[in-house]
Length: 349
Image (cartoon, rainbow, N blue to C red; front, top):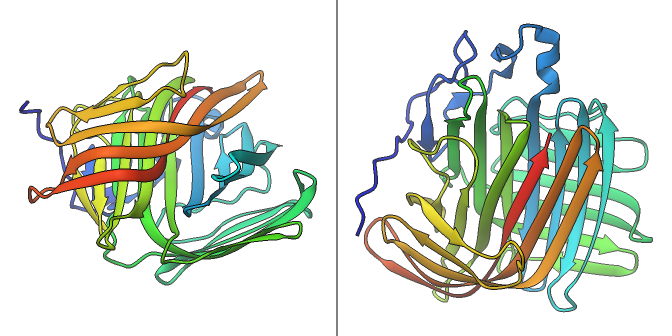
C-alpha cells in the first residue's frame, strides 16, 4: 500500500481570505470553519472588476430508487445561471430547463453555507433554498418545464452533527482558490409535480445532497466529480464524494466516504474512463488502497452552453457503483449497485 502525504484537517475558525487576498488556511474539514469573506479578494488592480470573476453556486439534488431531481442557483459574476433537471431511472428519460441571467440580476446567495437563503424570482420562475433549523427547504416553481408546469417542495434534514466534505485549496495563482462544501446523505421528503404526474419522496428511500461552491477559478477549468447517496443493506446511509482536476490538492482532496453521516477521509483517487465513450465502465481507486470501485453508467446527461464569454460542456453519467471502500476503523464497506453519478466538465468562465 502507498503511504501518501498527509492531508491537513482544519479545526480552527478563521476568515477564508487574509487582507492581501490569499487564503488564510488550506485544507479540509468535517464542518465549515471559515467565514467566506469574498469582499477581501485581491486579484485585479481595478477592484470593481473582481466581482465579475467570483463564482458562487448552490446545487441541491435528491436521489430515489426511481428518480433524480436537481435545482441550482449560480452567480458567475458577469452572468448567472438558474436550472433544474428531472431524470426517470426507469424510462431513462431526462428533461431540463435553464435561464441565463445577465450580471446575475435577481440571484441572491448567502455569505456562508451555514445560514441565509438562496433565491431567484423573475415573476414566472421561482427557486427558493431556505435555511431552516436542522433542515434545508427547497421550493421550485417552473412553468412550461418541458411543456408541463413543474413545482417542487422538498425538505432535506441536516442534523447538527452530520459531517460534510469541506475543502479549500489554491489554484495556480495564489489569489485564486476553490472553497467548497459537499453534504451527502440528507434524509429527504416531499414531492415534485410535473403536469398531472406527482413524484413523492420519503426519507426511507430518498437522500439529498448539497454542492455549495465559492471561489475564483481559472478562466479555463476542468474537473471530474463523482457522487452518490444511498443505503446499505443494514439500513445505514452511505455516500461517496470523489473528484480531481482543479487546484492544488497536495494538502487536501475532497475524496471521502460518508458513512451514517460521518466523513471517512480518502487520499488521491485515480479515475480511469473513456472521454470518447463515457458510457463505458469507469474505474476508481485511491492511492491509500482503501477504495476500489467500478461505476457502470446507464444514463448520459449532456449539457452544453456557449455564450461567448461563458461556455461549458458537461457529460454527467448516472449509473451504479460496485466494489469496496474501507472506513477509518478498517471496516470494509461493500457497494453493490449504489446509484450515483460521475461527470466530466470543461468550462470557460
